[in-house]
Length: 518
Image (cartoon, rainbow, N blue to C red):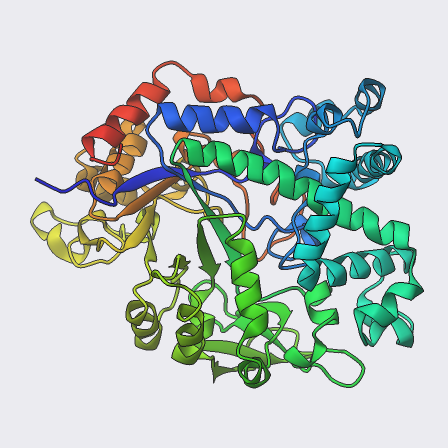
């Protein structure tokens, strides 16, 4: 009989997608706790979220103004009323559009939520509750290594009407030291950004403790690269490949492949790994430790970039004219491992074209990789029954081939929903999938596929909330390589959608049957 040791399951459910009838985005309020209640009742022990950082270009959590700071939009305003920083009248005046209950309205939030948070800060300053003020000061002191630079960056950015940092006046874009530059900005505006991060920290840790009380662990996300227009690059320019004006000399991307004849030109600045090494990778270590204060496990996006990354010259219009360059490899992870007494709490996103050196790096440090059922070769042509063992039985993305040390999914936030994916398959592919799942009715494919990955050897299995609810392609969260309001905006309109008849019981029973309910 299979051992139940270290077998867990859960949901991929980013907080922006949480339901919230009071706001234009999911927050850390009442409905967030209802999600955890539901998860516990259904036997789930893992909650995976995307980057918690402030959203930047294209509203993407993967393009942030900081790799350390968190998203102020996720702050719950009714909780600020409970703490005394907002009044009932303040909340009554905050009226998100009805359309935002189903789609996050980032533009509206920028114009309307940040001023309410500023009002909360002003009320906080007037408060006589010294205990909270002491807590605020303690947070600022304990997090000064990143908070000072972030709050300074955001304050200057607002003063400069949102311009990229390399377009600021010379005395501002050339970072010298915090002590010298703090005198160039409004101290009150600077402290407002510190206050927002403190409030998020308080609300998030209350949420995380509630999850921990249910023995639910949170899987966070760390994009390997950072945005150019960020406090990280501005305050650490020598750690990136920039010229004397602050412009990038080379940028990140991926080469041409089956999916794109021109590759993907991401445009992120590339790390000067030699300089990082000279400083004992201190920036990365601080980043990992900071994130582990918010989550229990970290998924590192584009893990292969630590082995080799695709370097494209600045000014190129596509990723075609790039080259592979060695990353820091084992040297970096040796240093990182030295900071932790136990195994590294890291999941390696190893999807796509993965070479043996990437597998070796992941295996050498015992890091779980990722498996996606949708990526298996379902075939363009029908095949004879006696040939079903090939190519199915040898493919790494089929559940019977999952090793224990991996995280398995139907699809991730970058994939179409499972129902949307089914709709994209041709008749032969659907027939192959039906045969593999031993499912004659198309309506049963979703749960048959879930049962396959839940019953696999994978230590961790996750399902996106859209797939659990059998939602179609309209509920897809992100389409890589595209921009537009359809990306990152989906949200659950009401918690009642999770309470549809029989769903919790069915999910719970599947989890028990697969020995994942501990």
